[in-house]
Length: 283
Image (cartoon, rainbow, N blue to C red):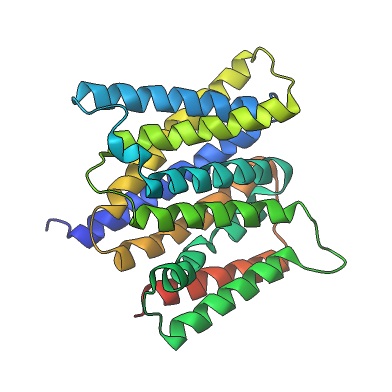
């Protein structure tokens, strides 16, 4: 039996989340050998050039007028913020914790859609949003065990949520390759900003080059699959599969970095994911 649009969208979304989780591993490994700004700049420029070449091959303009529209400029600003702070978070804090906090992004999008676009959100969905935010607080552990570095992930998720909201108002007609080139250009911009502040760029070793290549390949695959997912099937049916990223991230963090998420992280992640799935599958 052929897959329905919703089923194909779910497959694309799951594949995208796997790609992003592996990209995070390569970025974290590369940042142990190179400045984070250099890592983000290298992956961003490489991905941008490859996506741009693919767009040119299909006869698509590299700088369409839609890129300069107000919604796209706002989207770029939020994406730079998300990329920059999320990159800092996965480098300076536990990958499992950062990934768990990031899962609250769809909940912020739900709240933002109501506040910014006036979309109707039922009391049940608002309750789910509040439960999800409570889950984030459980992970952050305000009090004696609180780490200010955990707020990097919170700023990152706000940036990604703002990007997703701005995308809803963006002009139609941009191809996957054009959006990919723009997305990686914003990653490069975030890296350039960070590198200009921190400095310390150096010639990468063979191992660092492999990490950069891996981050680029899996990041591009994840970005392309995400775009396909959001353009296939119903958003409410496809978006809940974003939460598979947490599964991939937890497994990779435990297997590769020896992380052992504590009970508070597991409880908070469960609250965030459970409330998110509920909010996205209810009207």
